[in-house]
Image (cartoon, rainbow, N blue to C red):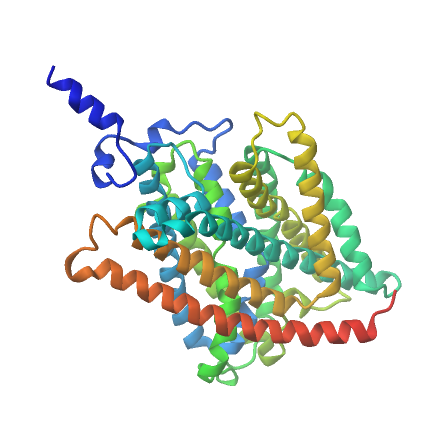
Length: 452
């Protein structure tokens, strides 16, 4: 008879009864994935999430910071971003334990965290969850726009050499049409072969492009080791874009067969991050060393236009980036249909999903046509995603879920979370303002000189 009240009390656990839920519920054990990713699949997909146009823009980032400052800031930025990803995923997992569900999305975690926080923020829970969904969608949308612009610019370089000098907008339309069948793939597991091919093409292209980066290197003293601090903001925007992709990272973790292997010192995430950091720094230094102040938004635009090898490199890398689009667009579809759609009750689910995918692809194409400034788009997407998804959201989730359980000795967790929020707000305002100014200037020029 004594056990009945205990069972009843356990069955009636609420959001507020939190810390003890860790001992009663393991969300990883309850999680079921229709087509799960093994650790190798997850590692490949993580590389695909981050490796892409960002690494090709790292020479430009180093140009804004200088070699020594660029290396130091890259390491510090990656440590900060990786720590925040760990903080975010741990917070989302704790939210699962609190309400005893196998899995929650980032918007759902934000909503739950607001419900666990002070009473004055409870009324903002749904709005905060919806706003997080919008931030995720906008961030991935910007990333996909950058991919479209990058692929179009590189194919235009080849097209201009062999054929007539056509407007870049025609290449954007062509890229969108070719992307349509790939973007219609609905299961993340079936994107793994595309990711594998994409990774192979990118690394082949990166290795081959080293031929141009090591040929005719100037003396090291001709390159600056440190630039004025005012230029570092441009570095942060580009480097943030090249070092992280929160939405895609969360999707990979959510679809793993063994998500407990994702975090940890030697987890899948840390191994992928270390590999990406090393590659980015090496590529950034070599690109800046070779081209100096003349380096473009993508180093592929610096290599010769009339050599067969350079054309092969551009084609290979552009195709690799082209195959990256479906995975990053997949994040948007996941947010829309997992959080705001009910597949079981909607008999027209597949038709609606097809329409959403088509509209998303068309909208990214429209933005790429209107604002084809690759550098400014890269900086804007990096600054926007870094401040919101990497810094502010993880800190808010952690701050609110610890509201009733405590913030540790001297409230160090609260101090850490507030510091991350302040850094995120400052970086977001400054970084986005600089990038938007460039985009507005570019848009004015586009409107004045548009030719069809």
